[in-house]
Image (cartoon, rainbow, N blue to C red; front, side):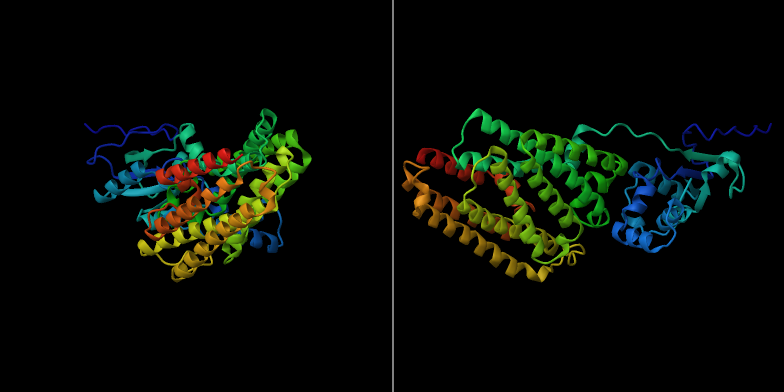
Length: 441
């Protein structure tokens, strides 16, 4: 006796039938196969180019924007696909089954993804629900339907917000220490400044990751970032950015309007760096050094102490060296992996030697500036035993030399400041420097 056709409910995810029964597999593109939002992927595939096209289109409005996004250039090979769903689809293809994607919008992009993955085509979600114009027998399909993904974990948020990068923001405490303002009120203001900078920087990191989405997915390590890997929805990141910046503004106003102005300068420079400056040779190095130094300036403003010109000059050379080491580490990693020159940086792998030389020169200049400071009359009002500060010179030489050697050996991550917090000998050297400074007071 012939079995009646199975009733199909498009709103309910169905389990895969056995290999013998299944002839067609349909997969919801968004929420099923793709661990991202196709609209957002189109928007951030090349934001600068899309913005230019929108401005020159002559047809303002959502219709024009939709047309531009439909024609956006998306690298389908780099999109974050759900590995379990993709494996099921490839297994179905291996069994000789037909595989179709279900898409509700951007049919051209869906067709491009289907062609890239070797699927049989695309069907509109409305047609599937109505049972119209389907290239297969509706009664013998299996469907992997869109499903709501769980809440993003705190670990994923911490990764996306770069909480580990907050170590850099401890630079706001440097003016408190060097000016010997070791009291509760000063540390309270410095702590508030630290929180403001951390929130501001996290928002900037999210924005930078959105703008660098395509480039990060081609990078051997950055492709694991939360946005690039699809662990954090792009829409969630877009919502978090203004919240973080509003918190930073509120915290800054609790300190002073002048501190808010410094934080605004930091944010404006960071945005300019993300959009333009990081693609300019050596301009990016100077900008990074300036952003590090600006944290020290903000700390002085937040606490209300006069910033020493010696500290500014010393900081500029130190951070220039660290920025060069960071760029050296990135390029050396690409060289070791056999990768080509970076597409979003104006450097070549062949620049490694000159970058290393400049990093070493900046480091030695920092030590020279510190030696001149210890020899000057500026130390007398601040230190009762200024001669002890000379003990810092060999420690500075050791740490800079070690950082350069580790970078040359390809044993340093791409951020030397974080390296200083994680590397055992570096922590010992930094702790010894702090002890010497306290003993010299």
